[in-house]
Image (cartoon, rainbow, N blue to C red; front, side):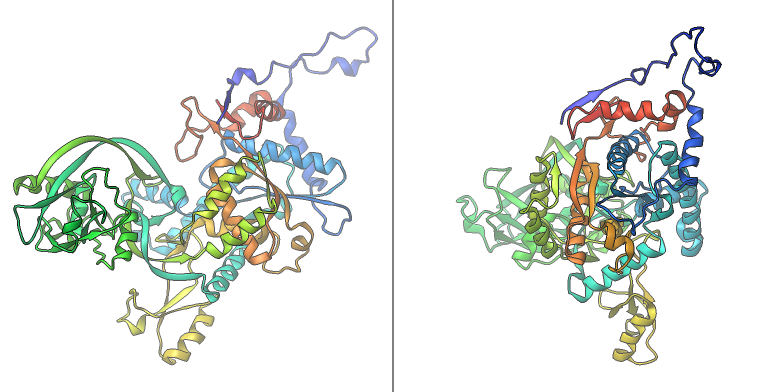
Length: 605
């Protein structure tokens, strides 16, 4: 990715006025010698008072519509947002001036886990947890935060001169978007595309929730690679040596795998090993996915705590043993290490392996560790019962549309990135163990499982509790007791509906939907092609039969002096208003756009 950079002093030189001559009128001599950005405020008020940017679906003519990427209500905007809005506004103003019926619709995103993390950190400073407050009071605080942060963002967007239709401002938790979420969830469940099941998820012990791939950042760390031996049951003088960066997970091992073509080990397939530090025996299995020339050629298999091992466990019908609690400590399957934090258990497991003669060697090892972007701790692959979407059928529809260049990507090279992602999907975990967000519209018949929600509790999906109760009564009678699922949906579920939920869907006869959908252009950074753009195209194709936009314009990112992407969570952003107050809005907007010689180019500040 190419980069371009500038310093703040590059923005503009102070505007000067040529000396007046005697023949000029007095009014010309009253022009200030330097531009004063404070004069800009009246124009935004003038635009709104005169509804200059208000779209009219009844107006004839060709349409041009853009639904802005909704900023998260996690604080305030930074220069990355200013860059994005400058690009959008340039296109919108151009098409408006050509006489097109133009809609630019603004809005914000509730940013479920991000906002909840902020609020829980505030509570921590008070010596409290969300459980101390209770769900109702916690959500009250969340809405107060939304009002504060959302108000700040709207003010910034106004100061940026964004020519949007403020009468149509939306929020991903407003009534219209919430209705769209309920419609989408219940419809997908009825079609068999949403289901509840046990699968490996990214688990954040800090937030005690599943997190999306987007909320996981890989960090290179200087760690260790531990080698230890598993003796054969029939002959303890023989053993197989395995290696791992997470020795504590050996307590959840249910096999050791070798390649069936490996002459060193193929005669051992089917024999049993004694799992050190436990009283369990585990089999030696043959699997073609084991690389013979990597490490010792023997792989410990922990199906409940590793993605590859999960697949191998399913192929070989192995037991799945979860050794972790939600907070990252070891559970009862951790034997004598139960109750210990995962990193404390790691040290103790290694010490005991050495004590009992199973530790072979330790090597320094630089490797990538996935960290929770919000919790700032390493995530754990963990077997958990969650809600999932089978998105392969939707991805197939999006791929078929892409064969017809729908949508068109600019620059075209991002077409391949988008295609590759759609072609390599796994089911999408959409449930989050949080309180702020769209609560999952499923109710459990807890009266059938001792007033508790378990993996076996019957559940009923409906847009309302009344709908779910009608189903439950038909199965269990009038005395059935229901309890709503406590979890909320992944933020990206509602964001995936954004291009059409904001226009009135599921009412396809709504004026805005009929007139402005599909939208014309999506302008966004390359970093969320996989997580947002693809989800929008899959959802839109499934629910509306059309791609949600004709063109996707991919731009680069605004980075700080160290090359890191500007982010509110990293606290490395620059408030664009600081520059606007000094240099003016157009100076900032023009400078950002000027620095982009080609689409997709990063900007370093």
